Length: 343
Image: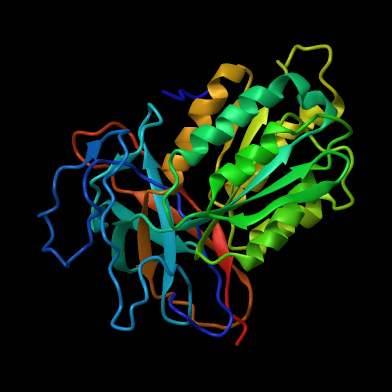
């Protein structure tokens, strides 16, 4: 259990969501500084101060428009230390990026906070009865990290998923809905994720994420694991999951619940998100707040792919860190790849 104290335009575009780093420092924009002038990196878990967005001449916010085209790919990255604290203050020279094992030249580097479109996928199946109250509190803590330009929706699922609250900037709408939620029925987790991904097509912000809160595996969905895994691989939605599981030795743990952690982990990590398994319900609010903070802080690495083929194939991405002096071993989180354009 980890310590919890979470391109520009071109014909067919894909958005990549961020994995954040956190600091009180203002976001640093690489200005082409000579090598060796980078400030000493620091590790902290305090939220960073808000800063105005950089606007284009036409008034658009190019920094938050995370897209790929034939000349630029932007990959968001978060960095943590061994204590699972976010690390900021790193510079361009601390990163290397590879596409299909071929090193790419980092041409753009930034650290930023941008508006989010977030879908909550909330389990209301029968086994959630005693866990509903803490799960509601977790949602409330998550909303405390929200920005005015963020938007949210709520999908609830038991035997089948329901779009309980469409996109709104009023978080009270969602909290009021959850207040009257009752637990019953089976668990259509995969169907809930699918419905949420479909709703995300109506998002107004370029950065998109799902936060899944569930207590076990799937036992009632029409969609298969394979179908959902393929869908999230193609989508521009980052997925975080909070899995509320019975202890491994529990006699009441079903086969579906046994497979739940692996399922949520694979889905989340494929998108650059993370899965947080929970056994102590009291940890739920803190974990949700951590995810909210993590979503709003990131490094963004931009590169022009050496492979310019428009073949529609999946390109695997890998980010490696150049260990800064004076810091413990660091770990990077990032989306594992993207599909190349087809025309």
